[in-house]
Length: 344
Image (spheres, rainbow, N blue to C red):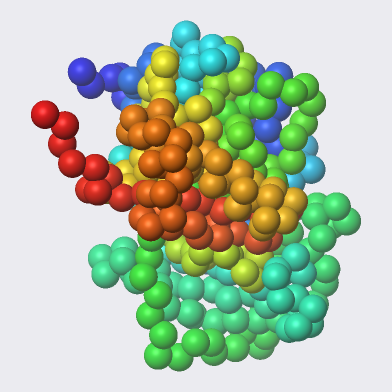
């Protein structure tokens, strides 16, 4: 059955900047199974405002002054009627398309190799949606710290043609649009920074969370209160420079409430794979959590014994560093569905 279609634009009234909070009023209320056309705006549009901003994005940067403690612009929250703690929210990404034909990457002072590189640098890319590729258009060195607790998110850099230098000649990057930060409101009171990922979802930064995938989040508060943002058009596993190829996206999401689901942690389900996410203060902790979660998923979802699941993980599951730059580090574990033969 097809649900009702809603449209949720990103406006100063429908976004919140840098946090999840279970006291936020819903920007939209829907029924389980409804579809939402949603706009997600990059918080880095100020890197090249002449290219990365239109009138709607400028209005958000001009009018939304309540920002932080994190940097990400989030659209929502979306309340889902009947969702309650103990349920799972399934978010199917039906479509994710660039709003403007430009994106930006910041090699930031929180990047994994900042101490080696010793500077911050912005690279702006031109996007070709028809070929689904991106090419560097120019780059420039950033000379003022972007630590969010000092300058605040949403810095706008006035265009300076003299500072813009050629970059990455002869390199073409495949586009894979996805939402870097998406999740439900945490149960704990207060504002929660949009930077670290957790069991509410948040800043997971897995480039596979794009069209064709369905994310699952354990509901923590009535209505779930889903927020969507941090749109990317490409990213590598690790996100080592500190950011992805950041670009505003328009998405199409089908949002459903599941009860008695086997997905009780942030899990991505695709036509070919299932992925569970683990987080930690270091990669050992994140790897341990991802391993235990995959072990549990193979038992609950595929009916394997603990011993069989542990053996299968070692020969057929892939463990990959999702990102190392978001406060809590991430590892995702992935299993192919085709290894499980149909049951008679």
